[in-house]
Length: 507
Image 1: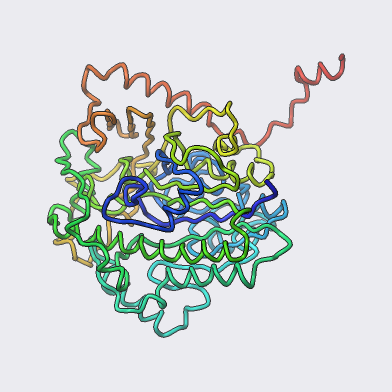
Image 2 (image 1 turned 90 degrees about the vertical axis):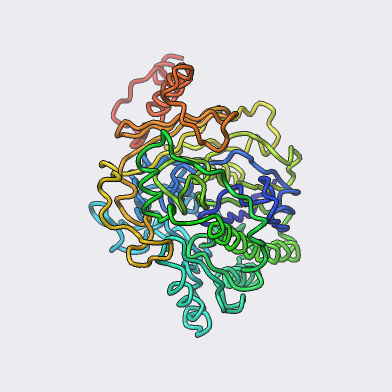
């Protein structure tokens, strides 16, 4: 394969189970289904942190958040880190970002590292040749002054942004909404901006279907709430207290099934809007004869619980509704299975794309390249488990700490709980195999789920004596993983004697 173009498509806050490719019967996404027919669906792909910027930062560096020292949302990549677009740019790629960033620092004022931002490092302007940013609620570079776009944005913020379950039908025409505008920006890039003498790497990053939960017609009414699959009710028996706190702070104790169905249907409409936009982009790649030499990867940064476990949006725990993400990949010449259960982490994205591009994987990258599997290497061995991290140092709030909370699901006074720093206090790690998931938290809370018999993670088996051996084995695996993944940077250049140096001297 010649040095391929790379199109990395990312949505924000979308769980794998929202797609028909992962079994959803209510929502069909023809563009993604056509992509899967040309590539492979990774059925077991997981983010490494269930929040936007830590997840994106891990993906763009191939390194875990505990290594990056990024332990909360809105913390961005240390400019001294080596990133995916930085390496690709150094190896001949034209690099671009179209859409949401939430990973790379933009200017000196964003730096919280000593010494500020040095030159020629991984900042937005240094690693991308072309940038057109898009924000939640429809604002996109190049269209920010358009009165109709501003009206669409203002409506979304006013009606659907601050309350836990705010949602609605945006009255704007689709062509004045962010998803459409990002699609137009991508089409313009392919036709007019793209260098024809270089391969391109484009991070096409949609801010949807993240909140605000709103979309214009026809998408707002495209999915009948009665057809939406619903998660089973979680009573929270035996669950960590942080789950019950989130349930109350999300006002989900006052949300009935009809309301959750309406929000899920709106969420699905936002996804279908993205899919229709992708159809136009895939057609343009075909028209420009680029498809046969373009790697396309579709994924999300993390999930949205959408009512599962009695919560909404994202939180500081590890249920699949937060962490299981879509991962669909098309590689020119791929001849393998159309689906695989091989476990994948988003930290694997960087080494995979670098290897497919023929670029070196930098020292300190902790992900595992999927390129051998995608290129048909019969010796490829998949991961046996995946690991996720979350949370900041500190004690998580208890139910007794709740003084103020939303009085109903549309109460706009206190904003959404997952935006509070308090919601992310209390560090945790989780290890997931095909059959079991163990979640350990710094305050001593623990969850253990038998995924074969309890795929919805309703019964915490941590204190079950029959599961003691499983728990101990998973704890051991996690401990060994933590030792193996301790940061290998900086390189030790202070000791020059080694067995290799003896061999070279006396051979």
